[in-house]
Amino acid sequence: MHRTVDISVLEALKSRSILRLTDLTAAEISAVIALARTVKADYSAFRGVLAQRSLVMLFEKPSLRTRVSFEIGFQKLGGCVSFLDHCNEHIGSREPVGDYGRILERWADVIVARVFKQETLAALRDNCSSPIVNALSDIAHPCQVLADAQTLVEHSVKLESMHLAWLGDGNNVCLSLMELAAIMGGQMTVVTPATHKPCATLTAQIQSIAAKTGATITLTDDPSEIAGAHAVYTDAWISMGQKDCPEKIASLRKLSVTPEIMKIAGPHAKFMHCLPAHRGEEVAGAVIDGPQSVIYDEAENRMHAQNALMLALLGVLPATRTVRGAQVEILANRG
Ligand code: CP
Ligand code: NVA
Image (cartoon, rainbow, N blue to C red; front, top):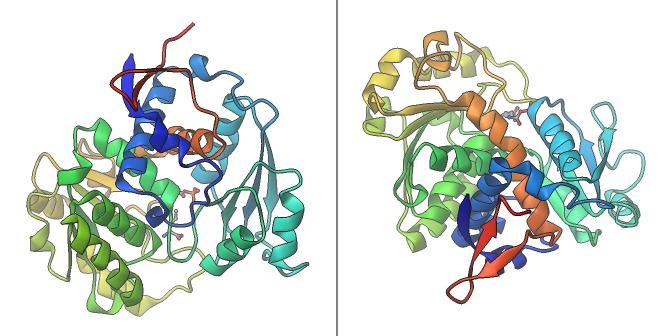
């Protein structure tokens, strides 16, 4: 299989940190997805390409998908991974975050961190010559959304003309999806209770990106506005580290993704969730386990999208040949 990617776009990603999706342009997102699909199609063509490369993972919160997909993905490409469990001791409590960066850069070619505060990622980036990648923070989950973008593309949704619907809490995943829609020029309808809208400051930033790209991001509390959406996305009502809040749950109940809600979007609409999911809360079992659900594709694509990102950040790009100037074909089935 041959897939056309602008290799100069991927080359420009070398050594960059990805703390939010807004650290990538539309062309870079498309190129990463194209490379992810190429890697996914034939891992044998990428065997050993990350030999001698090292990934350090710092996690202040639990994980199934992110941890395993990074660990297995990086090792499948020949690299080695060191995982530091920071669930019981936040990064920066034993020694300054800056020292983490200055020390880890001596061993690690790339650092992936899951943190409570976005500022921890910024402090790592500002004190480290190796790229830092956000594996989920209070305000963003860019690796999740790259995998989701790949999943949408694989299900024949064009990111530039997608209509994505969000129902639930205006949380970190919601903000990264809003960034995706804004950067790519798509449409997103964010349905939350008035009390749990996405962060106003970040929403304003995202709206200013949307104004430039022609994207439409609508914030509402009315689920009828999701009619015609290509995908309906939801997430846990209480994110990791947040306290249980009965009032919040009560306000979100009417936004649970039920078969009736999916009918408003339409029969073509995909159901999406970053997982872990709570059946009977943010989504009905009949929806998440039904024919419109693409949740396991999203989970699988975590590994492929992240692998593509790792290859680009490390400047390890596959064999190519030039066609039409900067356009190249990446040969997935070479050798
Ligand atoms: N979706 C996601 O990030 O899952 P984990 O919390 O299991 O890593
Ligand atoms: N919003 C969720 C996402 C988990 C992948 C959380 O932050 O816990």
